[in-house]
Length: 83
Image (cartoon, rainbow, N blue to C red; front, side, top):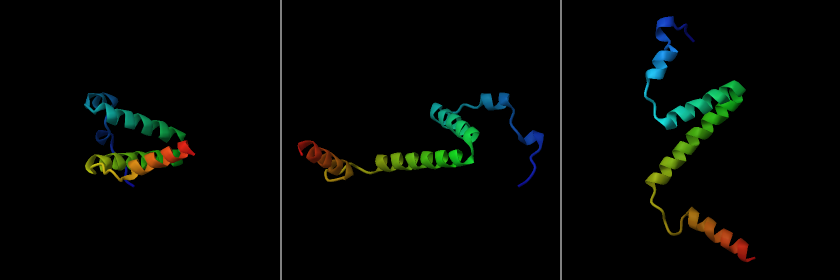
């Protein structure tokens, strides 16, 4: 770890000037809330957020297949409802 000088730290005015997308602002807000709850909550929240982003990106890249996981889950629900 190293010490950071005052000049290297952004002021609230400087941060307010940054144009962050709404999605990023929401994620940062959740991150701050988790940090207030503790380190474990922060770690879990960040991990779940990363996982959600990876899964969303993976779904966007992969074309839907007729026999894919979604179709399999739908068949299971149909079978349970019929039973």
